Amino acid sequence: MMTRKAALKNGYFCGTRIRHSMKVYRSIEQFKKVSNTVVTTGTFDGVHIGHRRIISRVNEVASRIGGESVVLTFDPHPRMVLFPEDNDLRLITTLDEKIGLLQEAGVQNLIVHPFTKAFSRTTSIDFIREILVNQLGTSVLVIGYDHHFGRNREGSFEHLKESGPLYGFQVEEIPVQDVDEVAVSSTKIRKALEEGNVAVARQYLACPFRISGFVTHGDKLGRSLGFPTANVHVTDQNKLIPANGVYACYVNVVGRKFCGMLNIGHRPTVNGHAKRIEVNIFDFDTAIYGEDIVLELQDRIRDERKFDNLEQLKTQLALDELKARSLL
Image (cartoon, rainbow, N blue to C red; front, side, top):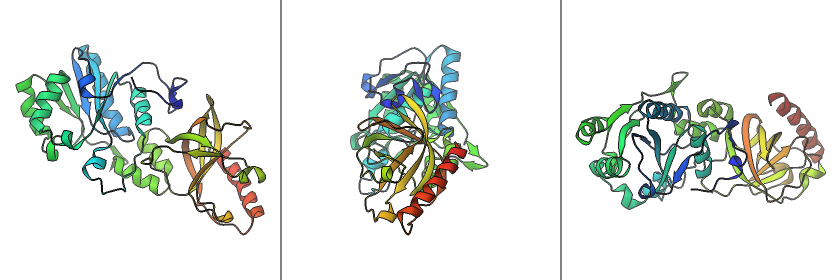
């Protein structure tokens, strides 16, 4: 079983009570077969509403046939292995965040298989025969719209429909999921976040976008202004950080949930250089250095900007707090 981070310590994730345990396997080979396995596979970055529709159907079918749901996903993200020179990809969820969301969605078995160049060369027929049939014992395979798999993405829904009767499993495709007639995708969510539009991302995710990390020491400037901040260090360098600006957010730390306002940026008023993630936790005055922390971004308040002096900044922070409290 994989270690859970602070977000799961109290049995909650994304504001939802987690009511079941989920078995997590580090490779396909570790998976222990169960009867009537209902499987889906994909990267599931963000576990957005389209992903949740697929997972909901997997759970529904598993319950109907007296089986168990299985999600096969990969780490690292396949694009990072296949296109290592492309360093632009940032992920909506870290692996631990994704595990928490999949558990919240009711998945019974999660396989996080190492994605390597060797694995990427698996042909579609070998993927079907060796992985889906022999190792997972698939009874029903549920896939998303336009799903491809195997070497060079050669496998398709039509390929699976032809192979299913030969190998004794059924195949079901979920049609494309729309939000306001716009197809949901991890790419669209990343774009919204890069523009700072966390409200749109929240609609697509059916859950606030989160930033997980731990609290580090800062320069104590916020305290001198009357707005002490916790500096958040994100350990996963591939985690997507939204556009610079000020955000209203919820803060999960020391086993409790607080309201707060978050600044992402370079702090131009004090000639800052390094990008910082700093959160002012409302009605809170406890030393939390080294503690795990999870931020749930609700809305963007404003752009980051340079003020003429610290007094102007302090005045604006007071207005930001009022706005954040009203949003939360």
